[in-house]
Amino acid sequence: MKKSTIWFLTIIMALTFAGLLYVQIMYMKNMVRMRDDQFSEGVKRSLYAVSTALEQEEAKHFLEEDVAQIESSVLPSYSSNGTDIGGVKYSFTTSGGVVGDITLKGNVNALEPQISSAAVQDRYRSLQETLRTQYLYQRSLLNEVILNIISQSSNRPITERADSAQVASLLHTEFANNGLNLPFEFAVVNRNGAVVYKSQDFNPAKTGHNSVFVQTLFPSDAKNRMNYIKVYFPDKKDYIFQSIKFMIPSFVFTLILLIVFVYTIILAFRQKKLTEMKNDFINNMTHEFKTPISTISLAAQMLNDNSVRKSPKMLEHISTVINDETKRLRFQVEKVLQMSMFDRQKATLRLQDVDANVAIANIVHTFKLKVEKYGGAISSNLDAEDSMVTVDEMHFTNVIFNLLDNAVKYRREDEPLRLQVSTRNLSDSRLEISIKDNGIGIRKEDIKKIFDKFFRVSTGNRHDVKGFGLGLAYVHKMVRELHGTISVESEVNKGTNFILILPLTKN
Image (cartoon, rainbow, N blue to C red; front, side, top):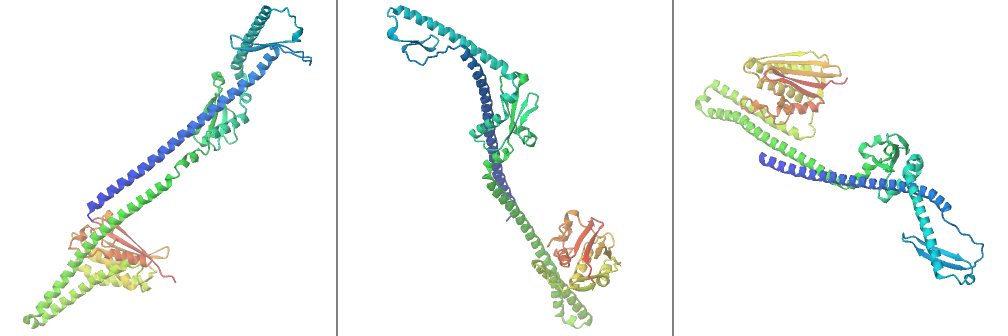
């Protein structure tokens, strides 16, 4: 699959997931906002109902006291001696809509028959006027009661007008009527914000300013005597978010799909990169094998020449060439076979105690000829007093050879190669091996990739520097198998320093 195709699919899927997540987030946000608005509206209705109920209770209090006085002092009362002597009852309705009746008690038959109907009508009008006067007087007294309520009610202490137990009961009732069955805390404060009384755990600082609801108590009071009730709900957030709980699994599943998608894309790019590196490896391997095979083939053809067979020196030269190229071919085959180690979970090692100083000294002595061939020099400072390590000697030797061979491959053309190998003991029973050169160095962006399989630095893809990109990957794997670590310090055009740290053999 082309890289552009992968990028196109990645962008389409990323936009799709982003859109899906955006829709879900906006839906959850709108649900929370709508739930919060409904909650606030319910609380405001409840607080208004509580305020109205307190005003009605106060009006009832004044009416019960003052009207009782009016009735006892104004309205006429009748008493009977307990004997039913009969009588006549007259009912009437005034022009103001007041309904009344008059009862004339006594023996009807004993009443004077001379009472004329005109006299009865005069008496009726007289009584009607009396009742009308009494009604107007009572209405004026009721007006006085209402004026007293308006002018004198605010003089009473707020604790008498709105008792804490009464307020708590009203709040519970009204919140329940509006479907708000959750704990709340409240307080009554004056105009200056001082608390008159409050519930036990009232502390609005825990919830924030926007979560406190305020309602005026007795709005008809003078402004300097205003009192307010403040209410907040400690579990408001939980109550509101209960409405979107069903969206959480959907959001989580979408997020998991997004993570899996991103991981899949990363794997796809890694696989593509690995495929490209393998193709480079095959190209390099073909070139590496082609040269010795061509040389051996040419030498074999020369052996068919009779003149060559008659010359002992020529035969010796051809045999030497065939032997050298065979060794070179075998070495390349071994390099390729090292690939099989990377597919195993753990390499098979033959561990033994080895003196690292002695092994490194032998390697330096053997490698000295190759360095001097290019006009360079190699030195060793084996200062470690304790250099016994438990390693596979063959693989340990290959690790050192690979690092030295890289130093020769990536040397600078304008300056003679200088190689330095050193050892020293660390304080925590470990051995440090340093291989330092003055070569072309490694760029910072390449340092973190040099231990990857098939990776080669930018100059490594040129055929003047041979290799498959397996050497440092092999070194890194073997050092880890030996329970050690490897790090690199490098600067372009100044050189590279590979540092190996291995545990010392325990006595």
